[in-house]
Image (cartoon, rainbow, N blue to C red):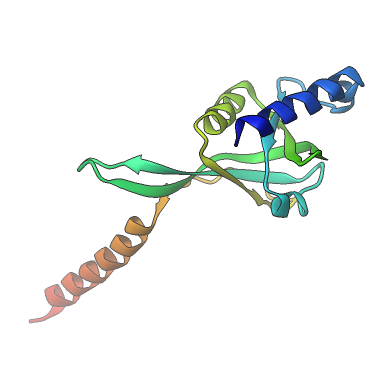
Length: 157
């Protein structure tokens, strides 16, 4: 996110805090209200009370010093406290525990691409997730084919 947008976001939050905005958030005990920028298209479908997963896309350095674009599900089952769409600044106010807040802030500070996935309201379960990459997707299919071929070869007389 550009510095200008971050300054605008800070100004909106300061104004909101002065107007009692923070008191209206109903932050659950043990959680923090964290503001995270969001794309306009995503904001159109996300409402207070929604449950989300947060993904982050970034360039990872592999063992052989090659870079690969990957996406990781950083946080799961996040509660949306409020949405913000003022002066070109679009953001979500999320209820995060202190550990989750650190990861959200780390993702924002690095300038990574952050996206949100809307969960079914009844789905609160956390799921183990592997990092997604095109290389893993393509390599995974080849490995499955090779394993199947080896099984067939082992069956042959």
